[in-house]
Amino acid sequence: MPKITRARVIVTCPGRNFVTLKIECDDGTTGVGDATLNGRELAVASYLSEHVIPCLIGRDAHRIEDVWQYLYKGAYWRRGPVTMTAIAAVDMALWDIKGKLAGLPVYQLLGGASREGVMVYGHANGATIDDTIAAAKDYQAQGYKAIRLQCGVPGMASTYGVSKDRYFYEPADADLPTENVWSTSKYLRVVPELFRTAREALGWDVHLLHDIHHRLTPIEAGRLGRDLEPYRPFWLEDATPAENQEAFRLIRQHTTAPLAVGEVFSSIWDAKDLIQNQLIDYIRATVVHAGGITHLRRIAALADLYQVRTGCHGATDLSPVAMAAALHFDLSVPNFGIQEYMRHTDETDAVFPHAYSFADGMMHPGDAPGLGVDIDEDRAARHEYSRAFLPVNRLEDGTLWSW
Ligand code: GCO
Ligand code: MG
Image (cartoon, rainbow, N blue to C red; front, side, top):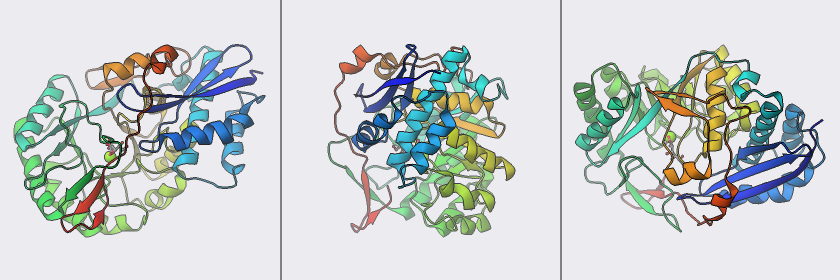
């Protein structure tokens, strides 16, 4: 058996913070897992170092399911983003090790490819509708089959999804949380206009997506869904906060716009009612924040029974390790829908050499044994952790709102 002899947490900041777990076995095989929880990085790092790594030493690295159950049930305190991200990191690293020992890419261990490649969506954003359309045209020219559209809101200084840089959007931008101001009524006026203009400029052969980022009430989301229906959105994401899963029933009663939710979910229990009541169309739970490949497969299997498809979160705060794991999962899972792909900077890619690739709107995890991704520890050591928070959001009268 490959015995776990050592595990380390590596924190690095090649332009943004990433936490990586590296597990080593007695035969020299190593595996990596992403443990990045944006804005709360060191909580997971410490959870792993203090409470997980000591329990891994001496275990059989092949026993992925047993280790998963041990860390989940054995913690007594179940679920939550910190715990589930830590478990995910261990799980990813163990799949990586299993793949390397088998001499196979992880997707082969998951049942093999169910498709030729993984359709991804890119992020087009801009301060104005015209800027966003120009960015979207760029993505179209690069072969993207699906594009997310976000634009600035007239009368508001900033909003979610709009960055200074055309390609890279990093919301975790300050040593203490930046404060944004939000107006639902102003926002609801601009988005239908964005989609109308986009269809005119981009045509109907491209999938168009939008992220509401938890800011509407259910009835407001129903209204927006109706307004966007003529432009056939691929999905509306995070229309309303999902702590109360029932909330989505009200949205459903008013619109046929497909709904996606779940990037902040940490387990199947966050999604169970939404899936079983067919209140969503796409589940966005990810490998890194929802307990690893092992747990995400369970969520996807439940979703498959209800014709809910996967649409994994893939923002830049998910490291290339999580991206690689997501692509192995996406390629194999029967009810795959789409994968988010926000490109990492060259600086980040240099720290995490990887085998996955993009061509013509599709991605492939590559055929290197394991996950096909590693961390260059010398380079990683050159980028010191730097605290960065996600913004908070307030209504115009100062009331704290969802960001
Ligand atoms: C998305 C997300 C991100 C999140 C970010 C938080 O759909 O890509 O909403 O942009 O805001 O991942 O850490
Ligand atoms: Mg989102």
